[in-house]
Structures are given as C-alpha cells and as structure tokens.
Length: 315
Ligand code: CP
Ligand code: NVA
Image (cartoon, protein in one colour):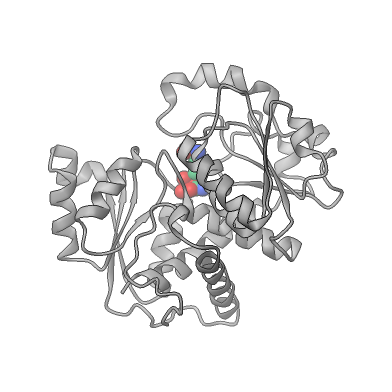
C-alpha cells in the first residue's frame, strides 16, 4: 500500500507537521481499512516482515492495544516495551536507545512524559518515530476523533467542536492543530489560567485563517457549547500531573460536562472523550452513558487510524 502523499519514512510527532491533505489521506485510508476489516479482511500483508517497537513511559490501554493489534493486522510484529524495563530506565541515553533500536526494528512508537524526549528520539532514530502521547500532543487520538466526527456528522468543514476543561491539555492541542487544518472550529471553555501552548495556538490560528475555521476562548462553558455539534472533554488531571491534582480539580470544577450543559449544544450534538474518563469529575454518567455519547465508536477508531498511520509511515 503506497501513499500518494509520500508519508513513507516520516515521523509523526505532532500534526503541525502534516498538511490538511495528508491528514485527510490518513482518515480516508483508515475508513477504507475499517471497511475491509468489517468485510472480513482481518489480516493484511502490507507490513509483512516488519517489527515495530512500542515504548511506554506511562500507562495505556487504548493506545497500547490498538497499536499492537494494528501492527498484527498489517502483518508486522509489535514489540511492546515498558521504558522502566529497558536500559533507558537505568540511565542509557535516548540517543543510544534510538540508534540501537533502529538497527532492529522498522519504526518506533513512544509514549513519553516530555515531548522534547520524543524529538531527541526522532533525531537519532533512523526509522520513523510515532508519538503515542506526550505532554504536548496526542496525534493518534486526534486522527481517531476526526474520523469519528466525519462518520457521525458526515462532514468536517464547518463543524463546531466545543472543548470544555483544561485549556493546556495535550488532547486539546492536537484537536486545535488538526481541527484548524480541516476547517473544524474549536471553541474552548477553560479557566483563564489554563491556556494552550503558545506555539501550538499560533500554528492553529494561522491554519484557521487559511481554512476558515474559528478558534475562540471563553471562561463560560455554556457560551462555548452553545449550538455546538461536538462537545469534547478530557480528564482534569493528566498523567504526570498528580502533584497539582487537587488544585486542578478545584479550578476545573465548574467545567463538568453534564446533561444541563449538553442541552445547550445542537439538538444532534455528540459527546466525545478520548478516555479514560473520570465519571463525576469532567463528565457525568448520564452524559457518557447517554444518547449523545459516541465514546466507544471513538475508541474503536483508534485501531483503524493506527493501521492507517503504520501502513503509511512504516517503510
Ligand atoms: N485515549 C488514550 O490514549 O487512552 P490510553 O491512555 O488508554 O492509551
Ligand atoms: N490528557 C490525558 C490524555 C489521556 C489519553 C493525559 O495525558 O493523561
């Protein structure tokens, strides 16, 4: 399966490095692979003989299992590695790890605390490096999210997505970056003290100008959600932020997605969450289990978008 957009050999650290056409290509391929999977083509041969190292510095359910299953379904061997079990955990450097793994495998996916560590890994690796979540971004999840929105609403351009919660969230960064490229308007409701990374926001604003998408910030969740097609939230306390957990819970308590808030959205609005969810904090049970919720379809799309990314990037 060759990509007409020349993605073979590319890293995927952040969707800022990908054009709207390349993102759309990945979404189209994911949709195709999903259809083939449902038609009974469970295992394809496109990456036969390849191995993919998958490093995790943090826990993961969806990313770990979807990447592993995706590799298997494309004919490749996934090698899942907990960072603490590698010599990395005993002080071997990232450059040395990158150069060694590159001699064994055809790609490396990594979930890291610091995005800068991913950049070092990519600098020294001679095989593609794919971000499986960092403190800055979560591109694999954003691809699954936009595939889900396209499936549910039939379009991306002109869609209004309201993100309610932590304005400095890694997930929000990826939604801003990809949404602005794809013409999806992103309205953010968050406390003014929690703002996105400046470079991400500048990049998203530039892209929004070109695509016609809007990016707006408010402290009022009802204002952001008013008429929204998609209401999205993420945990209030991300992995690695445990030391500020209480402070963030206090700050974010007015930003819970509940039925009263959902009623301000469009009558056909969907509710999305990258998961894992903390019910009773950022979302209530009645919303995540209610008629708006598409979270399980969203989670499922992690598998098909992971396959699209691996099939396109792994040489
Ligand atoms: N959404 C997501 O990345 O979930 P995991 O942390 O379970 O991988
Ligand atoms: N913002 C969350 C996303 C989890 C998929 C975290 O980083 O923990």
